[in-house]
Length: 283
Image (cartoon, rainbow, N blue to C red):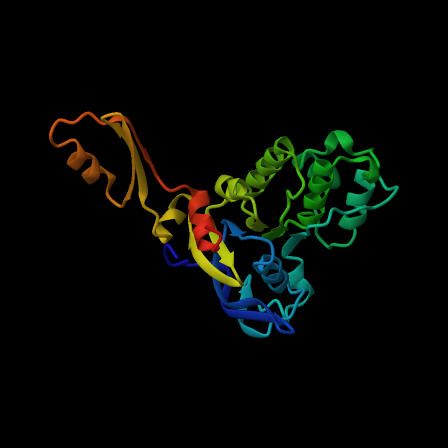
């Protein structure tokens, strides 16, 4: 981790969960600070969804200590549940109801809820308020899911792979909505297997592989957690050269110390994708 989280919305220590002989999560530690956008990144089957379901209180754990908004999600009551919002992987379907009717129906389930019309404006569905839910596009349905997830103004919002199946334009529109919610003070925990999504949204990223946390850091600093040398390429005397080195500046100085011209010189640094592939054992 990059530092100590002074105030944690989520604190996890030694979390483990198995299904028969399959261990989905093993000895996992996490801290999420209030106000963060925190991404859990990893390939399918890494344990992301199981971890989120335990944090939401929807799945029991085998071992470990977990607190979410100061309470154990395994025993927390209705008051705690009203403080969190959840957007599942599956898009909601309310048949013949209109968008506004759906939001009004959910608003009546809470003692305190946002004004439905204002909520639809917030998530970009005001112009579709009279449309039936079954006629919405995939992106619009996810916006409706988010509206239902934040209707009670939760302190913490869980987004489980929210843009799976989106085209690039719809995904970026959804990112803007997530940023808007974060700017409004909502703590957001999202799972994703899209590298660009984690890089675009998250303050910090936890890379999970085989049920364990491989690294936690900002997207820009994840490369510091792996041993990936820079790649130096150049032409010398009509011959192409390629070398990997931890100190490209020293290599270049050495090769050009006698005044040799290093033509077509390039230095390539490790990318987020390189770090991710190595951390998840896919390199």
